[in-house]
Figure (cartoon, rainbow, N blue to C red):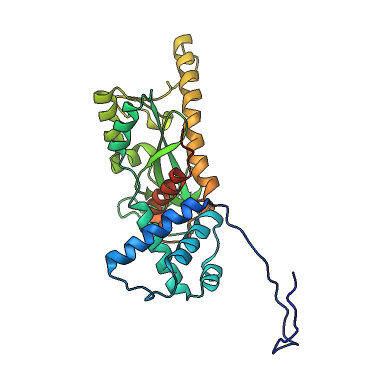
Length: 284
């Protein structure tokens, strides 16, 4: 709708457009984040009314960034704060959410108690703006993934048998392969322990070949024996369900499609997105 210029002190100035918008996020999710931000302000000893914006406004800013990938100039303007304050609010919101991300060991123990037959392990590249950091050993661009031909960070994702993401790792440079990233983050060791002690195996793709005990990957090569070919088909079908979990995170939270913050923050951002996604999961 075009705004009226009646009683406008600058009637000959440019017209502006006003409109209403909705945020596709459940009220319960916004309330959860608001409560977390209030608790964080209390922990820091922030007095009531001492901030430029309320915890509710801050929560909406954070959720709009995650859900719509809205730029900070727009978010800060709508919240009535400066861009510097907006970025500070955003990082604070990311951190309070990421702090609630589940520990993989606890997730696996709870999953076994719930009767899970397996979990799936897969890596994803969360793209970022170009960030040239040379590897001191090889001289290659640390954050550039040759596989994806893009800059980004490698994050390992574990999904339950229903293809829902249940744990995410910290970020590793995009040049690191999935198996190396799983080792570096401790995810591989945790899954091996779960397989050995809990009887909870993990399914992964060929990129994890040689991962060790409890990590089942398809057999490589052509002209496989019928038993190996059948096993590959079964693994591929089950593992494909896990890939849907990564798609759920990236399609639900548009900010994950390309991170414009420091790439070192990717791990916390994905962990925060996992917490938001879990909060919205229907209770079964």
